[in-house]
Length: 61
Image (cartoon, rainbow, N blue to C red):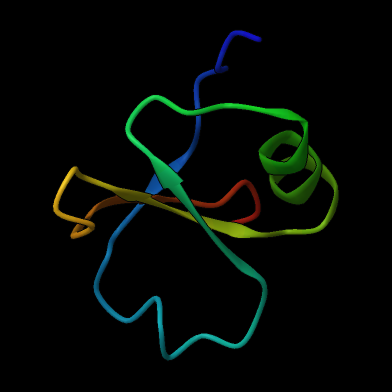
């Protein structure tokens, strides 16, 4: 499954926002991420190999 272009948002303050958050590894894309991002307003947080956040994405922001 090919990852689409995602709407990147700032990592600052994302944990203070109420909502649905899903973590993902670098480059990961699957049906769960697609459903959360496209249909449920999920914030996707991309983690590096040390599990540190490196990017965040949200379709509705």
